[in-house]
Image (cartoon, helix red, strand yellow):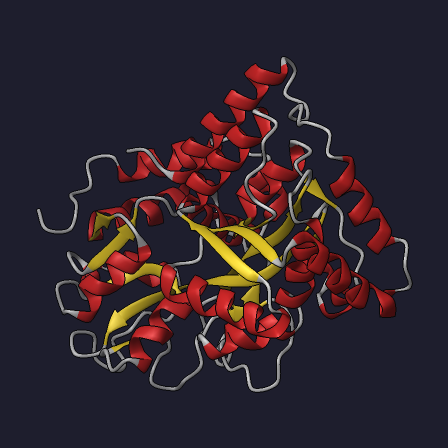
Length: 368
């Protein structure tokens, strides 16, 4: 089973091979982009947006955005940015691994195609580690919590891990009240696990160990959870199965996917009848960054700033979880956030991926 961290490790190996020592990718010099970024950065923060707008006009008011947002999110986000600044957005959309691989390959060729990137934390960390991102110092950072600020990139939205279930098939008082409950015999054959969720697997494992369980207890719980379930690929696909009643419960899905399906009329939820979940919620960051050597650096700066300010409101309209506090945002209502270990997962080089693969070995897939 090939999961997301495996793909990331392969991409990292490709970079290490090209650079000879695993350091920064040798990108072509772009003094114009460097000069634009520097010109904006040295200004007082209250003057940066105006200068970026002025410079973006000279660039031709164009932005190339690489993102792993699904099309139904990326399109309205791009349109909202276009309406704000009159900058035409060209979007390349793919899964996070595809976005990373394309950006790395272009960086190695010295021909970056993206101006800005918005994708998952692992891929953003890889881009930063390979010297492909430029630091941002705008006032928009003041709105972001310390836990959402990273070297060369900033959290733009959160994917929150929680179980999800079909309310026609899992009745009130029968829904899970803890991660441990997923191992209960009553859920035998009712559970679906996504094959790439090794970061969820690490988060729950660490939580259990930090709260007093032995490694043997944790191993037994995971064995029982795997025995209860079937595997599926893709969180959106899983939700389609759940919405249609083809599956009863998902061990984990992103709360925004569940909320969007519920808002569309599907009989699904991630909250018990009380409206308050006792299950620790792990919020995985997706982030935004500006590409070194970008063809449209001022537009990239503006998008970065916008996504952390007015763009956050657009994310709330789309029922996503923003990385900042936005009036009217209810995406975290009923949830209690637990720490998400970005540092460990970013440096694990596929360790948790291999463990999760081993857990799911032999587990049937949905439909079989």
